[in-house]
Every structure is written in structure tokens, then in C-alpha cells.
Image 1 (cartoon, rainbow, N blue to C red):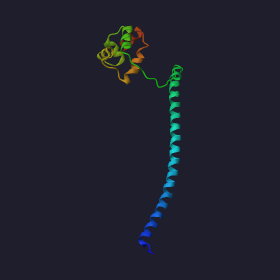
Image 2: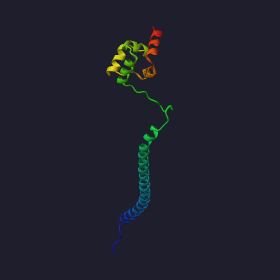
Image 3: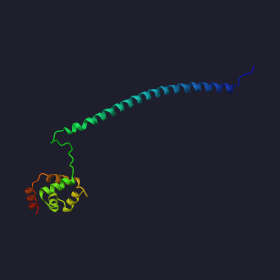
Image 4: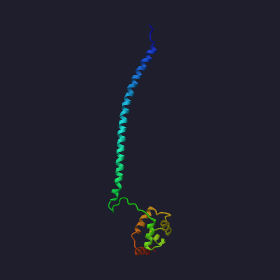
Length: 147
């Protein structure tokens, strides 16, 4: 009878023990991976639900914002309309130069704004807005006081 080679036996035993250790480590990693996958799936469901709620809230928000009472300052932004400026100047019966003097700009600027070639700066919009409520007599009086 032949004796097994000691080196072969050691090699086989080491391989068997290494496989056993690796199997144990892989099993714990497999369990952790499964747990992480379940958690990720749950988070994805939550994100999808939150996105649906957000879309729903966005649909109802414009209606709520439109019903806000007037006079409340909700971050009012001033709009500019070239046509509106033109009609205001015509209503007041002023030349572009005179209207520009009231607004604190040149007559050429007024002309360009009316033609749509340029638009006033944000800093100039409040001054233009303040001129909207003027009548002809008050506009003339302001021009006289500027001269």
C-alpha cells in the first residue's frame, strides 16, 4: 500500500478549509446584499410616491396663488409692455422727451422702449409704474417743477 504524499494532503486540507471560510464570508455578504436591495426598493417606492404628491401639489398651487387677496405683497414683479408705455404717453399727451424727463431717462430711451428695441432696467420699472396713475394736469405740473 502506498502512503499519500504529505504535500498533497496538506494542499487538499488547506483548500477545503479555505473554501469553507470563503463560503461563510460570501453568505454574510449575500444576506447583506439582499437587505440592501429591499431597502433600495422601498426607497424607490417612497421617491415615486413623493414625486406623485409633488405633481399633485403643483397642479393645485396655481389656483391657490390666483385666489390670493390683492394688496398682499407676494413678491410682486413688475411687467413692462411697450404698447402700454406708448398708450400711457399718448394718454398724457406728452412727447417722448417730456415723458423721459418725468421718468428720469432720455427721450431716445422712451422711443426705443416703445418700439421694442430695448426694455427698461429693473431699477427703472418702479418709476414707470408710478407714472401710470398720473393725469394730464398732474403730469404737466411735474414737468413744470422739473424745469
